[in-house]
Length: 142
Image 1 (cartoon, one colour):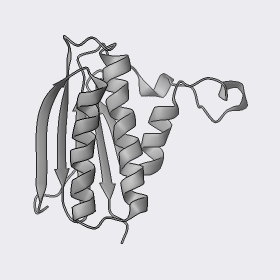
Image 2 (cartoon, rainbow, N blue to C red):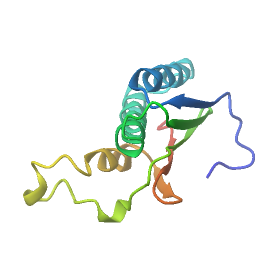
Image 3 (cartoon, rainbow, N blue to C red):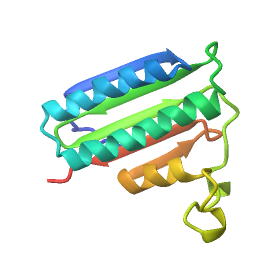
Image 4 (cartoon, rainbow, N blue to C red):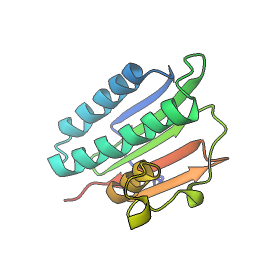
């Protein structure tokens, strides 16, 4: 979790419909902030991939692309850290029950890849509530 003395330079708290274009606009705004703060291309790539996966999961799996349902997106950016929370209105899931997509028997199955990518590129990934609330954090590599 962010420290009390974290100096956030950009914050975004939005509620969007379950629409991929709305998610892409939020993602673009967030990435521009990281670029403005001169985050490395590698860090920006990882954050982009992880947050996009979380947004797509919320829109497509959590809310089943139902545009009457919404996704909450909260983001805080500082020169050294990003903190993102995404909450959907879906039933949730148990991330511990996802198959390991790197096991030979699951290589052809797409389930679990998004969560695996989030964990690979972020320093902290946590699923809260019933699994419909994800917290992602990344500390900038200097």
